[in-house]
Figure 1 (cartoon, rainbow, N blue to C red):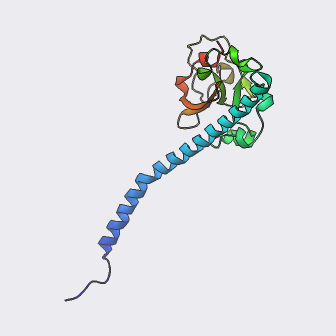
Figure 2 (figure 1 turned 180 degrees about the vertical axis):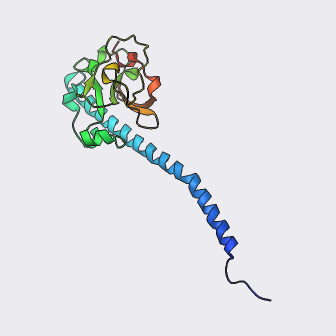
Figure 3 (figure 1 turned 90 degrees about the vertical axis):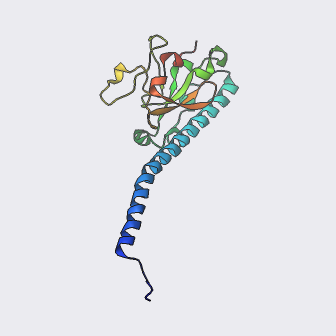
Length: 184
């Protein structure tokens, strides 16, 4: 009786096909996990900006001006934002909070302090829209003058937000309203 000393071509092809199928299943989850890691790094950046704002507020009793705490590079750039890497900044602060006492914000857990945004000048305002007006999703064809807030949903259609009380979370663009940018 002869003993086999190797694999047949069919056996090798079957094993290679199984490996190829497993790889095609796993590769999309790797990119999702990588983007989730970038989103977590971005949220950490916002938390650090929030700690800087909190220290400024402890000294002055008021929320800071954007130029007092926003810088360039490092924690001021979202790792997913290619435009932010070029401009060295990815976040904007709510201009309605600049230099006002913390006590004048009626609901700090639902008031936006900073958000991932198209950088313009470090601050933005939402104008006179009613509080329940949804903030539109940004598209390449939308004129900047038509957008009450330049939010960017970079992380799987979500944007990281730093709230006035110092916590950070992620929201879908359709979940934000103009009222979340107002102090009363």
